[in-house]
Length: 223
Image (cartoon, rainbow, N blue to C red; front, side, top):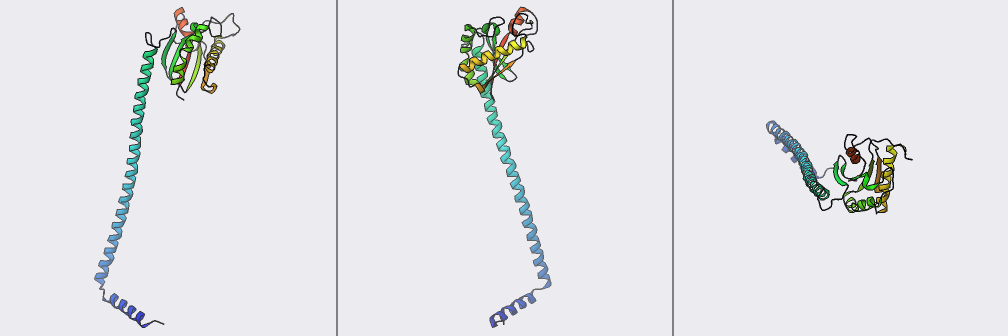
């Protein structure tokens, strides 16, 4: 049963509703629709701003990485230029029979085969051990890993138990790799490759070209 107070409240509400004209009702509905449209517009604008903020954050991250990469590239170039000048002929670290060269994979010490080995042999000579010993500190400092690549000239092997230049180049690379491991390199940081006569540094069959092509290259790898 409705109380007297509830009855009066309902009566007041009906009275107020009855007092609102159709025109006022339409204006109220229009204002309500306009308010909904404004809220929807603000929501869309807020979403667009969020997307733009996300894009700008990504752009800032990209620019920051580019700046860091540019600094790293500049530092690497300065370091490489310093190493190249150090080991070039007349430099403070110049070693007879050794050249520091750029390759597609990074810097490499190119050591003449005659410095390291007697003809047809795979045992590193005493001179060769001394030469490699002068490179150890730089190899450890500059390369996370190293790869030793053996190369020969194009003269066919006739009187040797190695049979082919490819086999000889691989055995010489293994000998240098073993020396590096004995000098403190972790075995899993040293790789080897043998290429025989198939990757000459100088094209030609002159004695000078063949002497340059008989070599071992120790590549300093960043990965």
